[in-house]
Length: 345
Image (cartoon, rainbow, N blue to C red; front, side, top):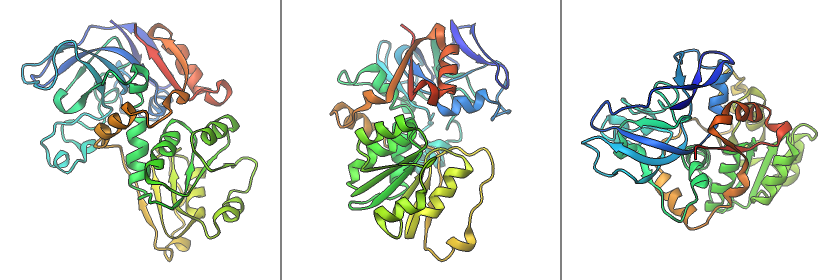
């Protein structure tokens, strides 16, 4: 089968690899229909995760058809169309029992990281009963791909951990795919003000279309002064959706007393935490990796057309063009790329 294989820093290649087989009775083999590229995949490509083995097949988001199910799999059968969760869950360890599936002792984020992932024609999914979801006929395949990771990540780690409430003023720092997912799912909770902050005018314009009440270009505006002109003391919730020191710094400067800072971005270097200024502000600061415990709810919401997700998809490629797709995504601002769909058909 064809698969996108990692060979180290800035070294990936589309290669022929053996089709995966059932290793454990709880496994399923999925024929991948559509997948995508995540910001985390770009981090791996750039050498951010040196622990990843040479020869690893990348990718952790996708939709496919069950090709084969292990003898202990009870919820899925050959031919079922399924959403592949970015998080693998055994369902029985102490963390899974707390719905902290990202910390599953025999799973968590392993696809495209510790085991071969979904940027391939086929993928083996461990603990299939707890790590796959049936895709309703009412959800288009490429929209379903967005439910693998970005939508639950934005909802759980941004909106829920940030405890967004009706009437809140919230700011989202970073208008990438996850930031846009925060924007969309925050609207479930009726905040009165949603401010999107980024340096990309195209993404800011889209954020306005998708429900942001205010947009701020941090490259050309004084963010703190603009925030104060909108909400006075600061926002009730600041959500960091990039993972770099500059965006973290914005979040800790724009919150009011009693506010929440929800960190969603994946950080690769240290940031300055201004505890000498913030200790008195009664802040709640949260971090986390998506657990996907809200994925079933989000599937229902998407099925009911609660989101305008088509606008997040900007590019389409075939699997044979995936190396080109990586280059487009690496130059997202120049190429106006947000979410790229890789089609295996």
